[in-house]
Image (cartoon, rainbow, N blue to C red; front, side, top):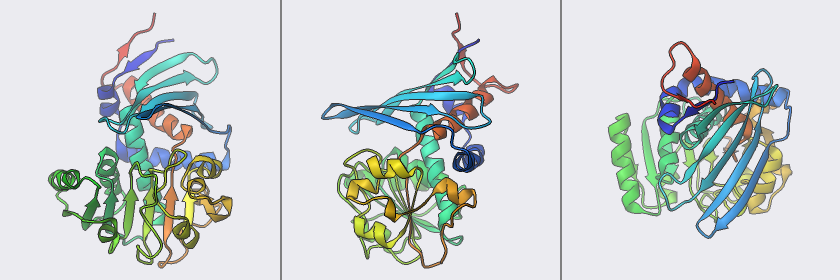
Length: 320
């Protein structure tokens, strides 16, 4: 079997967010209806500045492959997430591709956030607050434009200069009014959609800070000890996740001392029609994602098919 090597540039050229949105919509639905294997997220600290993690196996009914991803997180570096993803033949285990996982993970995370907003935010939601002016904040904002017509954005970051630079860059890229805020409270005070993508270990969003009808996506609470939304706000809201067990063991729920009782449904269950999502225009909805192996598979299979198709772009064959 040919083994394809796909660099970060190859992944970027072959990963289309709009198509991936529909691939992930179907992947979440399929996982909810026919989950074949429990997702594994194996994490180990390297030192005070970084961690290493393995996500496996990425598996979905109907996809003849599985993934194993190994990456590191170094918050002080840009990009903060670096690693590789292995794509294997599901029947034989042979290695089909090795691809850079940094850009793939960033884009699939952005698209998952947009998918959650499409399912859970009000149809007329147009005002966005971004908490955390890093790479993922920008990808989340760009991805949201796939599912909603946005009118203006406020951004907050503990580094005011980074928030200012983010506002300038996003205005240039998206021709969308983006204004830095001096606090989290100011950023979210009139938002319809709030996206938190930070390294915070203390809740930033608390009860009374958001208006009725707001949707919140919290992405930073994806490892033990990290938190962006307070326990009180999670109890008051309708909380949804990508995986119940992981939301409790290492995600937004368990990291603030709560359990499964606050989880209304997994996003896939809502997409599959098994559980309700937003039930009222006044609901505050929260989606907490840790990131799952099947999401990696959906994105990697999307890239692999594009890279090996008739219109393939890039890629190096390094088979023996």
